Length: 410
Length: 154
Image (cartoon, rainbow over all chains, first blue to last red; front, side):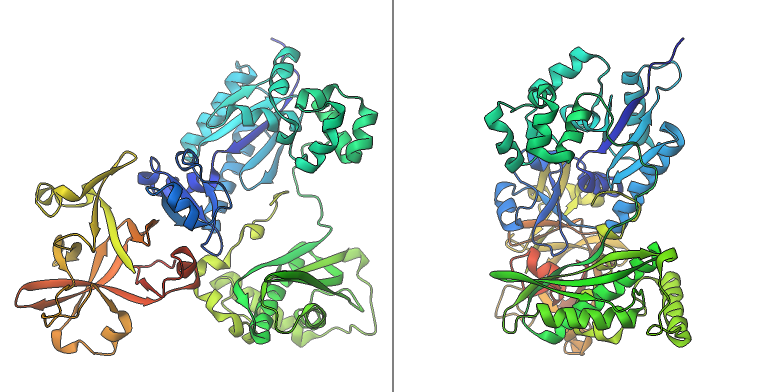
């Protein structure tokens, strides 16, 4: 029997964080469950039982508990979510396809080849059931001609569904039901640009003139149009494309008025950033410190490094200058981010008289890294982080979603 | 203040299921049959792992005339400082899968640390508390204290 041409497979775990909690606590499976974010104030994920009560992602807990008084809330645990995510990835690679893209913590694309003696619909069901059996997570699986189509169609089959779209009629039928805003990359602003041209559904967009789409949505939008028409615009990527920027930071767990506390947070993020630069073997030429302020605009301080570096002392010195530029005395800060850009890879690291080898600093950094690898992250850390010490008392803060390496999206 | 806990019915010894302390406190949430213990219940009781089994003990004291500490909670540092040494408080675990605070239920891994104090009326259990973490404060609309959880940081 001749095999059908390959399609793109797509798997998306249903209500991933909430489902992951139910894997280790099966008793919550039937309850409305909300997962709280890094600060404990907002629902970052909820299962379908809680969704029925109208609880939205991003909603503050004090609103969601009114909507769903029987709901139960659980603190996020990215280390556990990564464990399950990687288990899914391993199963996909071993059982489903040799070519798998780790798109996000709970989404995977793969080169879709039907299992022996099965069509795509049966294969989709087999993949879904296998993941549920082995990993314990409910996922929705879709097969279609391109990535964009597979991702779109998966949404029509959620939760715990399967769909294989192999005919033009089936494709047209589904695209006609989906508003353009269902496409990742087309939000309300872009949709408003399309509306005057009568483009409201995915089918309208697919049938539009390519030139018009390019004019309205630029080359990125044109790629989406190609994908809607069944022409793959991006291949399945089995390893992550090199980073253009690397950033670390986030919320300051409240309003920070005190410059020393802010400095503690800066050092924490420098340590995290250096860890990431060394892992990817890149050195930034530019460092930017961004600070968001409470009820005031945010500010950034840009620093160009004399020599690209991944050394803690060099990055910290640059970050201090950036902090000074971004700091507004007397205004409470809420978020701080460090962005390393102009990244140079090993072959492009220039030698400089101003950056002589520092064996002592290298040895110290190596020792710190080895101890932390052995005993746990942040077991050895800069004493300056004591200014933000409360945050280190909670082991859950050691691992954030951005620390999960290898995936393409947040 | 954490004013209630819940435990699946199957976690309690079957001998307790039909008792007046348990039967009226059984609730069905989703498909889960659970027993809820609230501070406002009369009488207020808590399940406690004590002397090798789960028992229901009186939860704190609501009477100002009693010699027992008023309320159902004692700060951990007051026990550690020896303030109640004369009463010989005994450390115990209050098993729970859910805690209730300001109208919100949150997941507990193993349970909450407690202290049992005995008086003429029998043993009484108190929930141990400590200063809230930032996370717990945000989650509970700025509660200043939180229970002392067993091997869990919230």
